[in-house]
Amino acid sequence: MSEVRVGILAGYPEDKKALDAAVQRSIWAEEQGFDHMSLGERIIWRHPHLDAFITAGQIFAHTRRIKMGFVVLVPLRHPVITSKLITSLDQLSGGRLLIFPGIGGDYPREYENCGVSVRERVGRTDEALEIMRRLWRGEKVSYEGKYYQLKDAVAQPLPVQPGGPPLWLAHRGRAEASIRRTVRLCDGWLASWVSPERFKPIWQKTQEYAREEGRDPSALTPAAIVRMVIADSKEEGARRAARWRADMYGHAFEPTLMEHLIPVGTPEQCARKLRSFVDAGATTLTISLALPVEEWEEQLKVVVKEVLPRAGITLNKART
Image 1 (cartoon, rainbow, N blue to C red):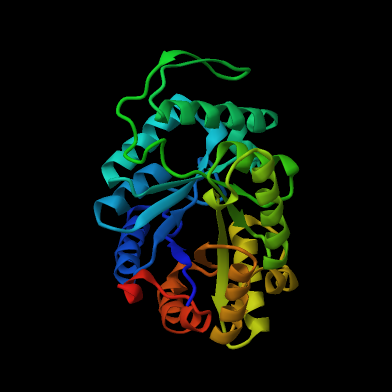
Image 2 (cartoon, rainbow, N blue to C red):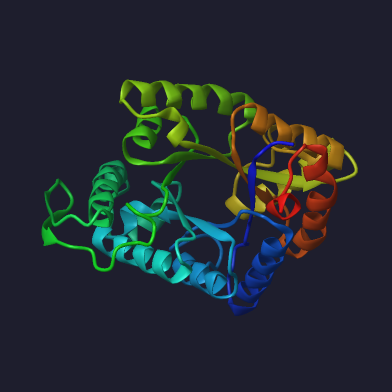
């Protein structure tokens, strides 16, 4: 059995009812032995979306062991404010926080309405990550950057986790700069909409850059968000996934692409595809269901009972 950490998406909470469901899903996931829950962040989006920091706080308040990781759109806030929010959650959770820094930009209006130019998102991210790292180390930070200037800034309190929560950069491996940013400023890579075939060479390149920078490649976490649809056939699963993706993100209806990228089909077919991410180098997986949230509970039960065992993956509960 593989020592693979597995989490699930908490949901896309749009109101109190959806948030309550995400909390209950997280309690169930903790009981099953999942390692972590995940959330996305959107300020302005196609759909209603509650604040990710507040949502994570609610989940932490109702769980004891499970970790919580979520995408943070780094360029949209001043790094001192972001640092404070992250530190507060790490303190309140007892050090159970993971952060997935994201650059975003796929919805330019989100940036425009937050007063940030999309063209500045890369530079702002680099400066912000450097500043937050220094604050979490307890330094008195003076900083003169293109976008941010600090004078004798000190973070109080510090995060529970020394040096701050792990940062796994969320990117699709399309840009050399993103791979290098993972090595320079973060602790791991969170792949999203990346096939196992692409995951492997990107992760190998990440490890090569780490060695060039004098970092231990084994200190970096290779992680992936893996969307999934369990169905009677691969074709049916791919169609349902493509419809969900089109409705959720406004992308084209592309069943063939879904069949290539993500696990779809019978539990056996999903297990083989899921296993291929592990074989490609991923040590941490976040399973998301490419379906309306109303269908998640039944599918998650099948994931636990049929897909994970077939993939040779054991949850923490089964190891204790």
